Image (cartoon, rainbow over all chains, first blue to last red; front, side):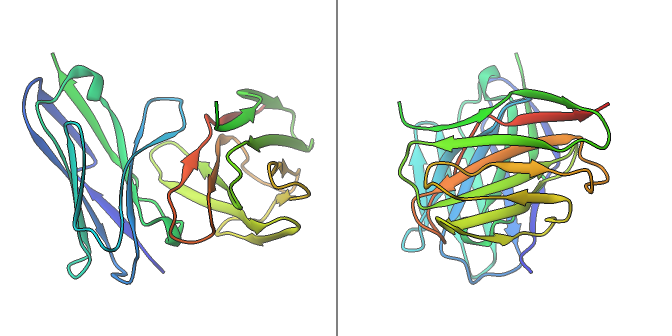
Amino acid sequence: KQEVTQIPAALSVPEGENLVLNCSFTDSAIYNLQWFRQDPGKGLTSLLLIQSSQREQTSGRLNASLDKSSGRSTLYIAASQPGDSATYLCAPPEKLTFGTGTRLTIIP
Amino acid sequence: DGGITQSPKYLFRKEGQNVTLSCEQNLNHDAMYWYRQDPGQGLRLIYYSQIVNDFQKGDIAEGYSVSREKKESFPLTVTSAQKNPTAFYLCASTPLAGASEQFFGPGTRLTVL
Protein backbone atom coordinates (compact mmCIF):
# COMPACT_ATOMS: atom_id res chain seq x y z
CA LYS A 1 0.00 0.00 0.00
CA GLN A 2 1.24 3.41 -0.95
CA GLU A 3 2.49 5.53 1.94
CA VAL A 4 3.16 9.23 1.66
CA THR A 5 5.45 11.07 4.08
CA GLN A 6 5.94 14.79 4.38
CA ILE A 7 8.84 16.27 6.28
CA PRO A 8 8.97 18.51 8.21
CA ALA A 9 5.56 18.34 9.88
CA ALA A 10 5.80 22.05 10.67
CA LEU A 11 8.00 24.86 9.42
CA SER A 12 8.30 28.55 10.39
CA VAL A 13 10.32 30.96 8.29
CA PRO A 14 10.65 34.76 8.09
CA GLU A 15 8.86 36.54 5.30
CA GLY A 16 10.83 36.80 2.09
CA GLU A 17 12.78 33.58 2.44
CA ASN A 18 12.75 30.80 -0.11
CA LEU A 19 11.78 27.39 1.20
CA VAL A 20 11.40 23.76 0.19
CA LEU A 21 8.77 21.27 1.29
CA ASN A 22 9.40 17.56 0.86
CA CYS A 23 7.16 14.68 -0.09
CA SER A 24 8.21 11.05 -0.34
CA PHE A 25 6.20 8.03 -1.42
CA THR A 26 6.91 4.34 -1.09
CA ASP A 27 5.51 3.10 -4.40
CA SER A 28 7.33 4.73 -7.30
CA ALA A 29 4.84 3.26 -9.78
CA ILE A 30 2.78 6.43 -9.92
CA TYR A 31 1.64 8.49 -12.87
CA ASN A 32 1.15 11.96 -11.43
CA LEU A 33 1.83 13.87 -8.23
CA GLN A 34 -0.39 16.66 -6.97
CA TRP A 35 0.34 19.38 -4.42
CA PHE A 36 -2.41 21.03 -2.40
CA ARG A 37 -2.84 23.84 0.04
CA GLN A 38 -5.29 23.70 2.94
CA ASP A 39 -6.25 26.67 5.08
CA PRO A 40 -7.70 25.99 8.57
CA GLY A 41 -11.24 24.65 8.38
CA LYS A 42 -11.27 24.69 4.58
CA GLY A 43 -11.08 22.20 1.76
CA LEU A 44 -7.98 21.45 -0.29
CA THR A 45 -6.95 23.77 -3.09
CA SER A 46 -4.97 22.25 -5.93
CA LEU A 47 -1.66 24.05 -6.49
CA LEU A 48 0.20 21.97 -9.03
CA LEU A 49 -0.15 18.66 -10.84
CA ILE A 50 3.06 17.11 -12.14
CA GLN A 51 2.21 14.65 -14.86
CA SER A 52 4.18 11.51 -15.58
CA SER A 53 5.83 12.99 -18.64
CA GLN A 54 7.06 16.01 -16.70
CA ARG A 55 9.78 16.40 -14.11
CA GLU A 56 8.57 19.73 -12.80
CA GLN A 57 5.75 22.23 -12.92
CA THR A 58 5.67 25.93 -12.16
CA SER A 59 2.94 28.35 -11.13
CA GLY A 60 3.98 31.84 -10.11
CA ARG A 61 6.28 31.60 -7.09
CA LEU A 62 5.72 27.86 -6.79
CA ASN A 63 7.80 25.17 -8.42
CA ALA A 64 7.27 21.46 -7.88
CA SER A 65 9.59 18.71 -9.03
CA LEU A 66 9.07 14.96 -9.25
CA ASP A 67 11.64 12.19 -9.19
CA LYS A 68 9.74 8.93 -9.45
CA SER A 69 12.86 6.78 -9.34
CA SER A 70 13.71 8.02 -5.85
CA GLY A 71 10.08 8.36 -4.74
CA ARG A 72 10.38 12.06 -3.97
CA SER A 73 8.77 15.35 -4.82
CA THR A 74 9.63 18.84 -3.63
CA LEU A 75 7.64 22.06 -3.56
CA TYR A 76 9.74 25.19 -3.76
CA ILE A 77 8.19 28.48 -2.64
CA ALA A 78 10.09 31.61 -3.60
CA ALA A 79 9.98 34.91 -1.72
CA SER A 80 7.53 33.64 0.89
CA GLN A 81 4.67 35.85 2.06
CA PRO A 82 2.42 35.72 5.16
CA GLY A 83 -0.43 34.66 2.89
CA ASP A 84 1.47 31.47 2.12
CA SER A 85 0.82 30.28 5.68
CA ALA A 86 -1.21 27.09 5.40
CA THR A 87 -0.84 23.31 5.45
CA TYR A 88 0.61 21.83 2.28
CA LEU A 89 -0.22 18.27 1.24
CA CYS A 90 0.94 16.05 -1.56
CA ALA A 91 -0.65 12.98 -3.11
CA PRO A 92 -0.40 10.75 -6.15
CA PRO A 93 -4.01 11.12 -7.38
CA GLU A 94 -4.46 7.55 -8.52
CA LYS A 95 -3.39 6.11 -5.16
CA LEU A 96 -5.97 8.09 -3.16
CA THR A 97 -3.44 8.37 -0.33
CA PHE A 98 -2.32 11.57 1.33
CA GLY A 99 0.49 12.56 3.61
CA THR A 100 -0.23 14.37 6.87
CA GLY A 101 1.09 17.58 5.39
CA THR A 102 3.53 20.31 6.35
CA ARG A 103 2.13 23.20 8.36
CA LEU A 104 3.88 26.31 7.11
CA THR A 105 3.98 29.60 9.01
CA ILE A 106 5.49 32.71 7.43
CA ILE A 107 6.56 35.21 10.05
CA PRO A 108 6.01 38.87 9.03
CA ASP B 1 -18.89 28.92 -11.69
CA GLY B 2 -17.89 25.27 -11.84
CA GLY B 3 -17.02 23.51 -8.66
CA ILE B 4 -17.95 21.20 -5.83
CA THR B 5 -20.42 22.16 -3.14
CA GLN B 6 -20.88 20.46 0.20
CA SER B 7 -23.67 21.07 2.62
CA PRO B 8 -24.11 21.76 5.37
CA LYS B 9 -20.87 23.42 6.43
CA TYR B 10 -21.46 22.42 10.08
CA LEU B 11 -23.58 19.52 11.26
CA PHE B 12 -24.44 18.39 14.75
CA ARG B 13 -25.79 14.96 15.48
CA LYS B 14 -26.97 13.15 18.53
CA GLU B 15 -25.59 9.71 19.20
CA GLY B 16 -27.64 6.99 17.52
CA GLN B 17 -28.81 9.17 14.63
CA ASN B 18 -27.98 8.76 10.98
CA VAL B 19 -27.02 11.88 9.06
CA THR B 20 -26.45 12.51 5.37
CA LEU B 21 -23.80 14.84 3.99
CA SER B 22 -24.40 16.33 0.57
CA CYS B 23 -21.83 16.61 -2.22
CA GLU B 24 -22.68 18.07 -5.63
CA GLN B 25 -20.41 18.86 -8.56
CA ASN B 26 -21.09 20.67 -11.82
CA LEU B 27 -17.72 19.87 -13.38
CA ASN B 28 -19.08 16.89 -15.35
CA HIS B 29 -16.53 14.68 -13.60
CA ASP B 30 -16.94 10.93 -13.74
CA ALA B 31 -15.35 10.02 -10.41
CA MET B 32 -16.19 11.23 -6.91
CA TYR B 33 -14.64 10.55 -3.52
CA TRP B 34 -15.29 10.93 0.18
CA TYR B 35 -12.48 11.47 2.66
CA ARG B 36 -12.36 11.91 6.40
CA GLN B 37 -9.84 14.19 8.10
CA ASP B 38 -9.05 14.10 11.80
CA PRO B 39 -6.83 16.62 13.62
CA GLY B 40 -3.15 15.93 12.99
CA GLN B 41 -3.91 13.18 10.52
CA GLY B 42 -3.95 12.94 6.78
CA LEU B 43 -7.01 12.32 4.67
CA ARG B 44 -8.43 8.81 4.75
CA LEU B 45 -10.59 7.44 1.96
CA ILE B 46 -14.10 6.35 2.92
CA TYR B 47 -15.79 5.54 -0.42
CA TYR B 48 -15.30 6.36 -4.06
CA SER B 49 -17.35 6.08 -7.23
CA GLN B 50 -15.93 5.86 -10.72
CA ILE B 51 -19.27 5.86 -12.51
CA VAL B 52 -22.96 6.30 -11.83
CA ASN B 53 -24.59 3.44 -9.92
CA ASP B 54 -21.22 2.01 -8.89
CA PHE B 55 -19.03 2.64 -5.85
CA GLN B 56 -16.25 0.97 -3.90
CA LYS B 57 -15.20 0.92 -0.27
CA GLY B 58 -12.12 2.81 0.75
CA ASP B 59 -9.89 2.25 3.75
CA ILE B 60 -12.43 3.19 6.44
CA ALA B 61 -15.89 2.38 5.02
CA GLU B 62 -17.34 0.77 8.15
CA GLY B 63 -20.27 2.77 9.52
CA TYR B 64 -20.75 4.75 6.31
CA SER B 65 -22.88 4.33 3.20
CA VAL B 66 -23.11 6.12 -0.14
CA SER B 67 -25.16 6.24 -3.31
CA ARG B 68 -24.43 7.47 -6.82
CA GLU B 69 -27.75 7.79 -8.63
CA LYS B 70 -26.71 10.87 -10.58
CA LYS B 71 -23.37 11.84 -12.04
CA GLU B 72 -23.29 15.14 -10.21
CA SER B 73 -24.26 13.87 -6.74
CA PHE B 74 -22.53 11.59 -4.25
CA PRO B 75 -24.15 11.80 -0.78
CA LEU B 76 -22.54 10.21 2.25
CA THR B 77 -24.59 8.79 5.13
CA VAL B 78 -22.92 8.49 8.49
CA THR B 79 -24.78 5.76 10.32
CA SER B 80 -25.11 5.07 14.03
CA ALA B 81 -22.70 2.17 13.51
CA GLN B 82 -19.82 4.60 13.03
CA LYS B 83 -18.21 4.67 16.48
CA ASN B 84 -16.33 7.93 16.23
CA PRO B 85 -17.97 10.09 13.57
CA THR B 86 -16.81 13.51 14.75
CA ALA B 87 -14.49 14.71 11.99
CA PHE B 88 -14.08 16.94 8.97
CA TYR B 89 -15.49 15.35 5.81
CA LEU B 90 -14.20 16.25 2.37
CA CYS B 91 -15.69 15.40 -0.99
CA ALA B 92 -13.59 15.39 -4.15
CA SER B 93 -13.96 14.64 -7.83
CA THR B 94 -11.75 13.87 -10.82
CA PRO B 95 -12.51 14.11 -14.54
CA LEU B 96 -11.77 10.43 -14.94
CA ALA B 97 -11.04 7.66 -12.45
CA GLY B 98 -7.33 7.18 -11.91
CA ALA B 99 -4.47 9.61 -12.24
CA SER B 100 -6.29 12.81 -13.09
CA GLU B 101 -6.25 15.96 -11.00
CA GLN B 102 -8.42 15.96 -7.88
CA PHE B 103 -10.69 18.86 -6.98
CA PHE B 104 -12.12 19.30 -3.51
CA GLY B 105 -15.19 20.81 -1.95
CA PRO B 106 -15.12 23.11 1.11
CA GLY B 107 -15.89 20.31 3.59
CA THR B 108 -18.47 19.54 6.26
CA ARG B 109 -17.58 19.48 9.92
CA LEU B 110 -19.63 16.88 11.76
CA THR B 111 -19.86 16.93 15.53
CA VAL B 112 -21.59 14.24 17.56
CA LEU B 113 -23.11 15.56 20.76
